[in-house]
Image (cartoon, rainbow, N blue to C red; front, side):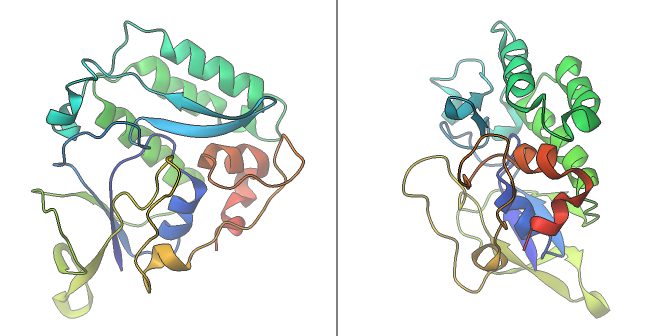
Length: 224
C-alpha cells in the first residue's frame, strides 16, 4: 500500500506509524496551501502543556490561493530562534535531544526559502532516524479524489502498479479530526504510549520529535 499525504512540519508520531506499515509514500505537491494544519505547524509538550510551533509564511492571508510547492517562509519573523529555544527548553534534558540536535539545527540555519523544501529536508532526516527506507515520490498533478487507485510511480510485483490510499488531511491539529478511511494503514496503526518528558499521563498527537527525543534509536518500536 502506498500512502498519499500532504507534507508536514515535524508530523505527529502517528504519521510515521502509518509509514512503518506502508510500501511507499506519495507526497501531494500540487495542492493549494491550507492554513491551520500540520503543513506549517507541529505540537510539542512543555512544562506549560501542549504548545504549537508555527512556521510563518509570506502573505499568509492569500497563501491559500498559492500552490503548496511555492509557499515562501517569512524570515522577517525570528521564528527559528523561537522554535529552537522552545525545543531546547522542552527537550534539552530528554535522553536523546543532543543526539539529534545538530542534524535538526543544520536544516534550520540553512533557511530554505520554501516551506515545501524545509519540510522535505526534515522528512528525509526523520525517515533516516526511524530507519524507514520506503520510496518517496511527488504527485505530478492534483486530483481532489484519489480513491485507492493504482500508481505507476510505484510498480509492484510483475510491473503491477501499487494501490494508493489517500490519507491527505486525516491528521489535523483542529478539534474533531477527520478519521482515516476504514481498512487502510492509517486506520490500523497506533503509537504505543511511551514515557514523555512532562507528565503525568500520556499525551497523544504530539510531534514525532517528542518520541524521538525520549526513545532515540528505540523509537521505532513504539510504532504499531
